Image (tube, rainbow, N blue to C red; front, side, top):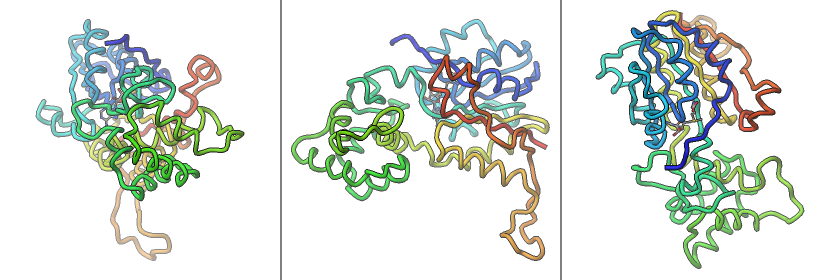
Length: 311
Ligand SMILES: C[S@@+](CC[C@H](N)C(=O)[O-])C[C@H]1O[C@@H](n2cnc3c(N)ncnc32)[C@H](O)[C@@H]1O
């Protein structure tokens, strides 16, 4: 395995925001390279515990090594959206804090063989969990035109989706599209030469869209957050970092709803929903990276952190 490199994003803001209790129980839903977790562990006494979840076994292996000095770390190989029951089985009915740092790690992006990056040649894979069936190769070579279009519009907000998808279909009728660079070349050929399409080049949105589809990144996010809010202890804190507007919108809306007493449609004369707020928003606007962080880690530029506290 290559060295696991990942600079944790908004590290101080997350650690301050979680207000860590030394004897508390904490969940890191996306432990990755363990950067955030290490700082949480440093603040825990021997009575405190941290459960670190990831669906990428490479991340868990890296954390096992990096954090081997900490006896109170429990690693779990799972999608965090399915981990509620696993936690219950381990006797964790409630906890003091939880972090979700969404998206991919730099390790995943930088490892050519994982197939996440249009800058590195690799088999079209993009699976965070390598034991899962569907990969990017399957999506690109088998999904019907309409489904591909929908993904590029919805998950990539790609205005040029039609041309890209038509070119993918044309190419795959000749031979399957096997590598990240083959896909990148097809995407680039779908744009006029003079177009410079923001940061990251013209392939960025399509790669993001396919990655979101392969890993089901937006499916079940809302429900998972709701379940975890229920498991938070009173006064407990939850921090979520997102990297694109689709995810942030979901997080913002769940938090807003849970921080509101009545959620009846506007103009309803008397409340009929009976909804009671369960959380307070710690920050109304998302926290973003400081100038100094941006200069050290450009990947922090799209990060948005939202924090809530359970009532
Ligand atoms: C941005 S990285 C986390 C980095 C980490 N906070 C650190 O400091 O090193 C995101 C990680 O979340 C994992 N991940 C993404 N979606 C997941 C999911 N639904 N369930 C479990 N892990 C997930 C990815 O495999 C990746 O390792």
